Image (cartoon, rainbow, N blue to C red; front, side):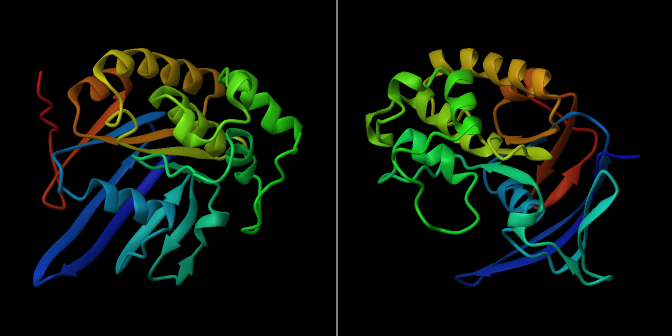
Length: 228
């Protein structure tokens, strides 16, 4: 059985410009990379899988379970899909501390977690990502690496079924990227959590590409031609 079974059709129209996303793939790879230039449709694909954007047609299945199926009228809400989504800019709440940002991953509503929250799962990820010294800091007080770790901790605290990453290293300086790639690769191996990563960086592909799909202008290119 494939881990991912995805077929998507979605038309986007903005300012008289039309963009058609039309792709289909199945993969059992624990680390799947969707690779391509900016504007290829990578982020839109990830949002359709996550349930943040509704496709016009097609399906999204994870381990055989339908998360979306237009023909069967199945559309599981994003919050109930069990997928952790880490945005390119990390999307941390600026008015919440590191501890509160992580705790937000356990919230069912939109109420802010308490500054004094001491949930065991939150404490676990503070330790795992060495964020205990900055637990009471706000995002603007953090380094790029600390912000990324906070975003990953918030994504993982609810024990998701899979991790979706949107250009996770693009906002980091080159010296930090290599180290955090290694940290993420080690974490994914230890947790054995499926990872779907989108990128335009060949170095990300080399590190995480158990399987690689190349996307250009809303279509998959086969075979993937990754720059050396």
